[in-house]
Image (cartoon, rainbow, N blue to C red):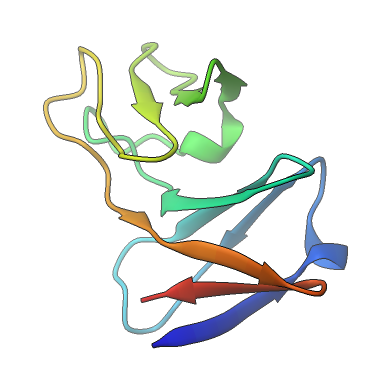
Length: 100
């Protein structure tokens, strides 16, 4: 079921962190100007906030130790031991919807 979670006007520099009561971890939304990506905002290496990292080549880089997480799949590079969960996301007008 698609759930509205944000408006594009809420984003700052293409990023927004949302908290949903049904999820223990916050969700990072990234807007590239064309697509919206949604993934857990917690690095699986040391629980660092991914929203503080840089986006490079389709991945977000954890600012603490450099683990990379693919925006589409959540797959990781070391030192992160596990991928992050990703959520299907889409835009309807200026509303961001997630399939939670």
